[in-house]
Image (cartoon, rainbow, N blue to C red; front, top):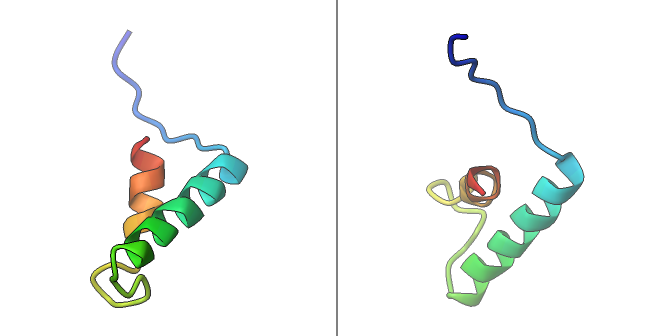
Length: 48
């Protein structure tokens, strides 16, 4: 059977983890709303 690539996320879990990553970024002194970091929390949450 060929490899089938699909993405499936629990939005509740993803949103919770995304907010935690956003807080970590802010705790490090960064602006989580700046262009280069705007999508980082979501990318990190989905990577897990």
